[in-house]
Image 1 (cartoon, helix red, strand yellow):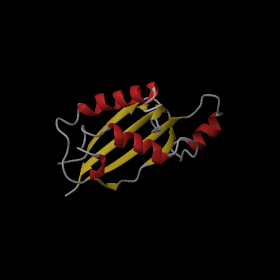
Image 2 (tube, rainbow, N blue to C red):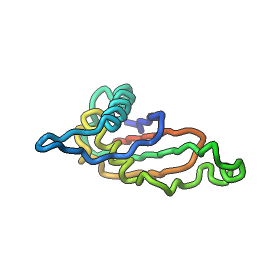
Image 3 (cartoon, helix red, strand yellow):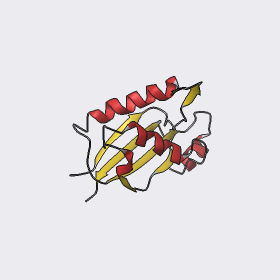
Image 4 (cartoon, rainbow, N blue to C red):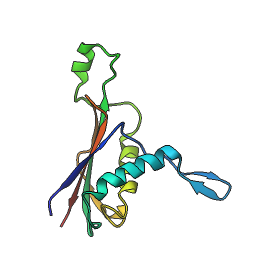
Length: 133
């Protein structure tokens, strides 16, 4: 099977710890909304969850602010984004969101591709999932 890729439009979203109120644990509304978008897009590409090991690669693109000068924007286009959120939290959100859709459990992720955060012309996250043999 070949690599499956898809794009999640909008600002890259990082994993957030579930909150609690007494014994009740819940995700905040923003996390639930973004996870629902991620899952709706992924469902179009995965009729059934993959079994066996998989490789995951994530490219988070952050829109260059319009307030930046053209010179600064041109210099940073495609360059690493070194601000928050952390790349590991962006990947964690994708891992959790794709459970039972792209794979049975995120424990199947046996390898990571060259994931990155970069500056670009629009906010988006590009996800690649590749079955490993």
